[in-house]
Length: 262
Image (cartoon, rainbow, N blue to C red):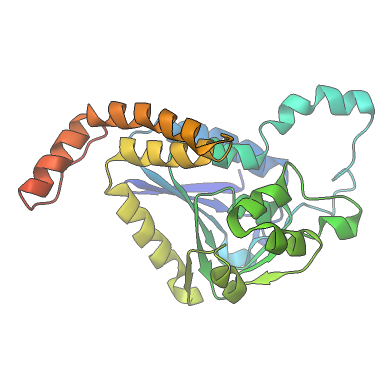
């Protein structure tokens, strides 16, 4: 399986590893993510996930495997219709719907589907070598599964339109427009990503999960009043957890809380 998984304490690192093709995306990456994220969702020791590209590939991911002549083709309308359920397992949904925070550590080119994958994570740490590209329109297609709309939610319509029509975003611009939340020298990328992941892993994990859920689901709720009222229920549920009681007690006693996800 070209998707590698390593666990370091409460953090799991998933690495897209097809270095001979600059970590080009094929169906096995989707299958690997579906399997690994499914396991990590139920691994209560894991509280945060980092997604990155194999350093030997000198890229995060070079996008779809265009060497395969079947890429971006559909055999027939019937094949498309019967394949729609498969699209629901597209990387965009796998990462967005994963209940725990996911950090993209972007170590080089993130192209096409590789580009979309980065901003379907929750936070982005970028190497100075990172670059984002959506070349689909030049290939006579378009960014799949809401790829441009998802980007617009991060950086606004103008920046997203510019990218969707083929203009690259380098690391400095990504940081300036808010696509990347951290920009670091290349050699420091994984250290910073692990630091951010470690900070998240130290948080009460149930609260971190519902904070992610509140934001990702809330963006789909058409008015702030309804989004706010749903959050009341999340807040109430969290206030009953042992972690909440321990965190409040630790704050009053001026010590670090011991959280267990209960």
